[in-house]
Image 1 (cartoon, rainbow, N blue to C red):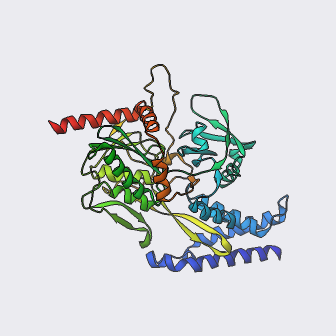
Image 2: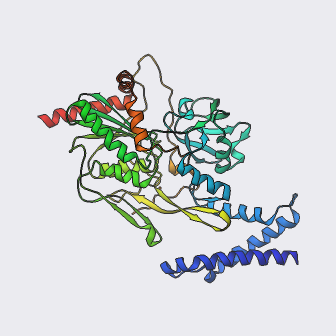
Image 3: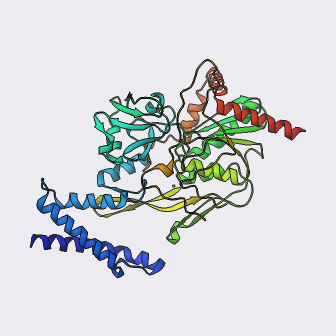
Length: 455
């Protein structure tokens, strides 16, 4: 009788889900799970397993926990970016969009049984501790990462500002090592700019937040004023930029594109997933050459900007092949405060290239080397990308990485922080940047273009 009760309950829940979801599916292809024999076969197997666990498992497990585990497995088996959010996690996602939490400042994803650093966020504890794109987190404190899921890993790494956490890191070609990191409230200035030389501007975009496009436009204006003339050229540095808001990436792309077309489009199974985002007239650089720098830590919104500028022949892309995070996640509310983050579409560049699991290939490839002859930089394998993640979506021939979203500053706060940088500090940054191989090579390319143009 107990067995029948559990089976009956499971059937009721499953059928309720089908009834709720069937209308939207039927609108597209007239398919309903109720018409599928394999649906009921799978349901029978599920209820049999459910019943055996309830009766024979060494510890008593309540129904809610079992159902939540089953739902979580159903969703997380799809791809690295879809997830089932319990009420606490759901509230934390809402909180993180407002941006207030204590953390390390990294964007992470799964790689096999472990957690991988997709990219450290500029000027955060993780960045200052030397974590790099492609690092594998083997242990968080005393917890072996292979025994927990991504969500549990995030919970362990977050905590009160001022507290410390030890991470055991795996990196190619060297023995695993331990870093101790002190948590902070993660606050990131999404963009900053410098004048490298006369006429050559440098724009660093660390993340795509709501005010970033406005900040970028103001930065370019300030660089023009400092240069006392229009910029001859610009370097846009998107290295280790994990992405951010789609709207922000579109707005920033449109600052530099002055021809009809699209910035990006999405394709999914439902009409609402199929969207196209047009370009808008107006190039704030008036056609001056652009070099975009990227590496394997450049993901999502970064790839949208790089792909748009590349396809519109508006910029030369230099560096490494990007991460390849080209899928779109939609947030859906469920009953009792639960939530569902579900991958619903793929991103495509204006020319129809899928970003998913492919990334953006640079026009000019650069190795990750140092210009300092007296120092030998450690060789790092940056081969891990979106396509290497557990259950990664295929590219599909023809946007889990979990971001510790930083506190968003207002445009006024960001610009104030820019103004507070002294000329001496600017020069220090410029000197450091000119020792950066990527920046050095980008400057050489832009100078060559200027010579060619003036012939």
